[in-house]
Length: 553
Ligand SMILES: [Ca+2]
Image 1: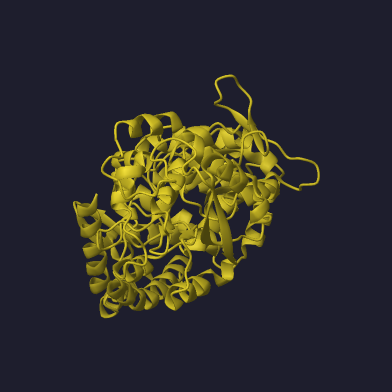
Image 2: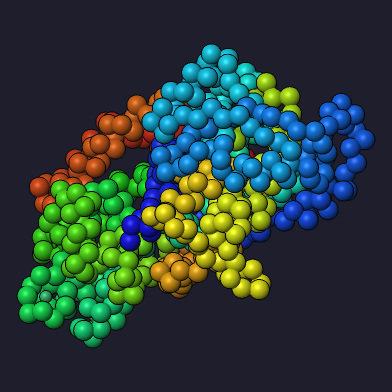
């Protein structure tokens, strides 16, 4: 249990926290496998370097090593508490052997990242490379326009065939990667297992269903009837009315919201906007959202929704889950709420439909963490630097980045080199603790792509089960949710000002409506208040960013 939580934490939450926007990730990968290193060479042999006579002699435009004589570059990044000493990490040592490029590290703590990064850039005393440092759209614009961050476009075109192919095949991620001015200053971290692209899953205790001789619900009404039966018919057969039909904690509410909103036809992935026929709209004033509120209020009034949902801590919530007392809940995995051993008890409910929406849809999240690699104008080896990072956009390089060198923390277990398992040497409490000594990817959003093919090869029963459930219940119904758009500095300022009050108000009213503290008769007043808070202007700003995103890809 601990291990998995820490795995999920490092993949989803920590990565998100570092960027300051957990859960804003999406869709499905437009399946593409980055080319492997052999293909790098192939792709490159077609180009002669005759036009690049100003290149340093030391540099090889194709193949390894990247430079003939060793070079050392300075790098700024963030070191997570779980990580060991970066100088000792096999990741850096092996890369140096392969490329002849080594680094000196300037490492911030997660808490000081924003401040340290700012200070470096503002003082002019910045390194050759910003790595895993979650550069924001603002910073891209500010320092890109000053030429401090080098525009990567030409470098990628000439020297990074894997990056080039990856973004050609995945234009949606290119749109999220480019700066608001259309330039290309940074590279992202992308992790593509379905468990990352389908963040929300709606779980049900299948033993309870079996005991009551009920089917997996198909409509929102079926779902209601199921919860009602959970409350009234003693599905755990202990003679006590101890069942909690549905529950959540405040920090996990957005997943429940997403699951129920999907039944009413809205794609919610953690932000309040969705788009229909190119037109952006604010979800919390939409008809489907009103229906979501009314549905949840009905559950609350009838005792089907845990009355402590809005007040309990995550720990209190999980403690009920650990006793298998919650019949249905939305979460990343069932074993975040119940125990690891109990994962077979839970089945993922496919998207529900309703009188408002007859199509099964499920929101994608975008497992992309932008701003994780930038080359500065102080870097004398920009060509070598882009070639170095290009390796992590290959299948093999992504696996190496994610788990460290093969044979240390993990190994393939079949001849086809598809399935792999973790190795935990003695003295380490978890595979994550060991991984933290092998690669900075454990805790830092390192640039590159970890393919779903690799991630799906992890041979661990609970993970295999999770992926199978997702493939069956959600992948067929996935739709692109609102993209991760970037704002200019000026827009960002306005967005921040407007959304602070609006989000606070929406959150408070959601809880008050659901718990019946305020009647749904006051809906129009609520919408009116949001208009007064200038929600239309906020929507307009998202529309501008959305249009820019659409034209960029
Ligand atoms: Ca009972």
